[in-house]
Image 1 (cartoon, rainbow, N blue to C red):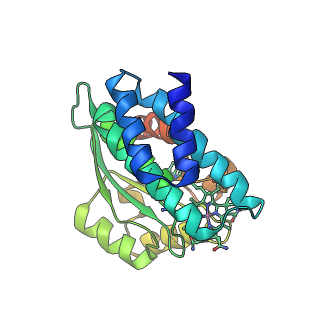
Image 2: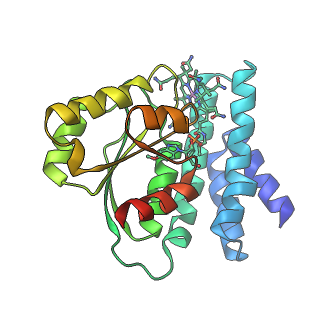
Image 3: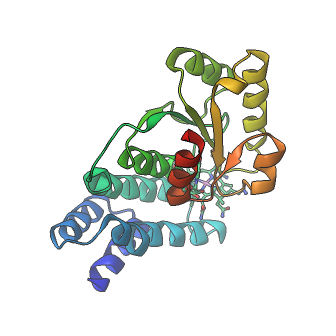
Length: 210
Ligand code: B1M
């Protein structure tokens, strides 16, 4: 099985969408768990993409194709994550903040929350504070989750919280933030709750819902 996981990682790194899908399906058929496929295959490949991107050995178009391959694999394991006894735990509204186009981490967090029984409404990427305010009014979620992957877009989380305050909505919704540049300190400073990954995001959501 280890070879198969390595091949999945390789397929993501190569941006080979069909191969990522085929190998992920093979791993599911062989009863690998969603966690194994993610950690030892899909995420391993994506992490390597991140390293090569940083070193300037991969460029945006290549990273985009790898992201698409990763997403295709995630769709294959989605039913596994959603298996189990699902009871409705609460409603979450998720968005990647304004100026930021990264959505893989947010999708993963959304998927895990859905697996834990939450209803998730995903507003997508590059979401302005105004759009989030409107969506909070419309959907009245229990939790608002914001994701940022760039140090330059993190501040838009704070702007969104301020916009919620101006509209009298800040105390009507629990706010969660996350993403690589976001720290527990930063979250605390802007009055939000922090979790570092998809697994702890579910734990945090459960805590916030009590
Ligand atoms: Co971008 N990018 N990127 N990129 N990209 C990073 C983030 C970067 C670290 C790469 C690097 O330099 N090493 C760097 C940011 C540096 C910084 O600001 N500190 C960077 C840069 C610079 C850029 C551009 C500016 C590059 C350019 O154009 N010159 C540009 C910006 C575009 C924009 O957003 N306006 C850009 C573009 C892109 C692509 C579009 C090509 C593509 C995104 C495609 C997509 O998402 N659909 C992309 C990608 C894929 C990456 C890397 C390689 C991978 C990100 C990823 O998906 N990781 C990334 C390098 C890296 O992270 N190693 C990089 C896998 C994912 C599962 O993890 O997103 O961390 P992650 O999510 C985790 C946690 O963070 C957490 O849980 C998730 C699951 O465990 N989490 C939450 C996330 N959100 C959460 C919310 C929560 C709770 C937890 O509650 C609400």
